[in-house]
Image (cartoon, rainbow, N blue to C red; front, side):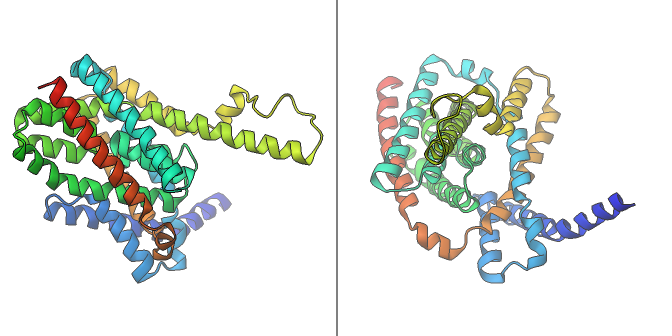
Length: 355
């Protein structure tokens, strides 16, 4: 009986806040459905922002709202099923090379701008770099768990990325029409330079059927890199944390350890490595092997879509205005500079290579 009582107690503790997340997620999807072109994740974040800054979160709802980390991690794992590694082969070697080059350049460029020019903290810089270089919000949330990013950093990076998603939905079709870009050039351009998958597909098919197909296949190839980048960031930050802890221990005691501070065993890295990244990659491999039916994939996509909505309502509550004032507009400037540079350079490169 004590266990049952404990379970009921936990339900009473968490259900009210989870109920608020569910209500916010349903509301965000309903609003986005009635207003075509409006991103439901952005609406979810805004709902959380209003809840935190206007309505104020009651104490009895706080524990349940804090569960957004659980929904986020679960959604990331399920998102792996949407990645198809064979998309890389279908996109062709030239497009694949362009994807790798543009993605790598964007990642390093945003990191350099953030840290060396705008003085942005390491974790937020990495979130902005991942979001801008790979697949928008999906990359932000995938990398966030790998680097122990704070909730307000995740929410700020996601909101910044979604802001540019909204802008590109309007700007890209206008540029494509003004420059009379071919379907292949426009589709690949959208696929390598825009942030999130949804806007890429929407913009591509708004141009033409062929452009939509090129945009989709290019973006899928680019999305596949998310696992590699998340794993790389996880190893990098885990190693840095261990080196810092080892150096601190050396300063406070005699050197009685097993080696220098830079010598970190694979076991130690594994202990620090976020296990959801493994789940994400395994599910991607299972999906690529064709073990999921089309119906299964649609169900999984719907599931992680809802989980992300729940998570982003909760993440929005961490976007308190006083915290945003401290962060300032530097992240937006970083993404703007990087986005403008990559968009122009990639378009020039594509017109030269693809004609």
